[in-house]
View 1 (cartoon, rainbow, N blue to C red):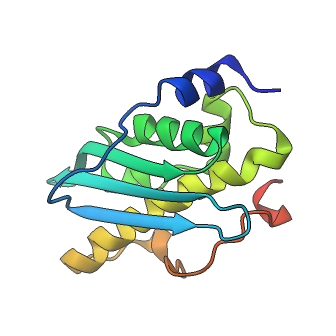
View 2 (view 1 turned 90 degrees about the horizontal axis):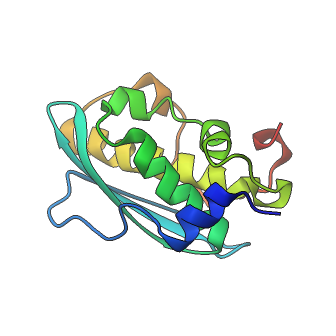
View 3 (view 1 turned 60 degrees about the vertical axis):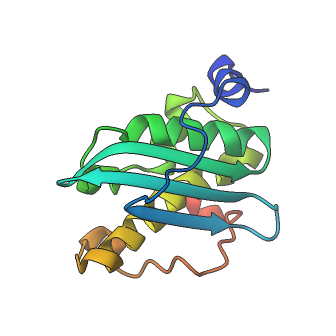
Length: 146
């Protein structure tokens, strides 16, 4: 049911923890499935030089958080905003359909952290247009999984 990569990132997640004095912190959660993801970014110039996460959730939530942090570490903030849930799922060699919402949560956690960074630094990113970090994310919406 789960790929080797999902199992690997679940049993040995990368970038776990928190960053003291982080430049950005984002948290998203889904009350229905109980998953909560918190991401911390350390940004120099416009590059994410360090990223950590804390996830309360199932194995897929932990694996997608881990993979998402790996995918955007060392990237620019703008590049991080290009990260899609599909790219995270593909990097993990796929997720079961019922767990695709975990990859959406990972994408939203990254966006939430960048949103925090933008707010603190009075920056504007087109990709965050309409993004509400306080929205109760229901990631079981079909439109995320097509």
